[in-house]
Length: 324
Image (cartoon, rainbow, N blue to C red; front, side):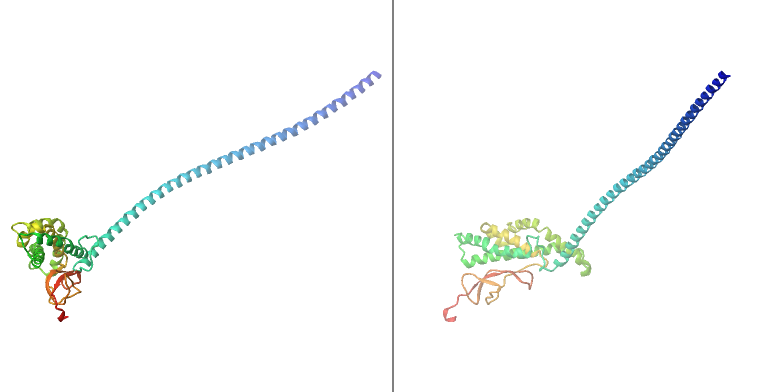
């Protein structure tokens, strides 16, 4: 019986130990379950975060694609805008050039209209405009006339007096001036015959073009006219007679007279000095006085009745002291 009791006690002790171990195992299981749950929670959280990251990544990729598309669109727009700007600038340049050309043409047209029959307005680019011709006419007297006068005076065979030499040079100029006027009139008369019978208003533009053409070709025509005037068959008898003594004078007379005659209206060389000395129109030659004895050099006018561009030279009559 004692053995049985001892065995029962031992069995109870084992039972208690077993229960204790079971409780410890249960505690461990609970602990493991908690850790498991925590691990599962962390896994779920990680999965959630991963899923959220994937969504963010997809969203970011979508935004990146949109930004890329937008950037490409803006690049295309930028390129198109640059092309439009280039085209606009080209158009502006073309329009500016067209405007400039139109203004130039308008200026030329207005200038031509203003200059037409208005000698007070001249083309400043023309080296043979009236004011320049006035200077050249004065220089002709001061230079070539003086040289020709000396050459003729020094020639023993001619044996001319001073007054005769002056008259020869004056009449050479007069012959050339008249030939130039006749030559230009002859050139224009052919055009006038072509439009004979039409009204003045109808033929005015045509004749103006013809006059402009004669003036434009003057520089090319003058050397031919000069050869014609100097030739032995020339109608200018004094020119043919004295050309060996005054060739430079003659050639410059042709040049200045033709350019003067071809102006619109023609410039006028006046060979009639009047009886009384006019200091507004003439200079004195070698002496002073109030009455003109003879003409040395004519006056050049801008046009008939117009202002003087170059004064003439006269020799007044010698006056006695008793008359002063």
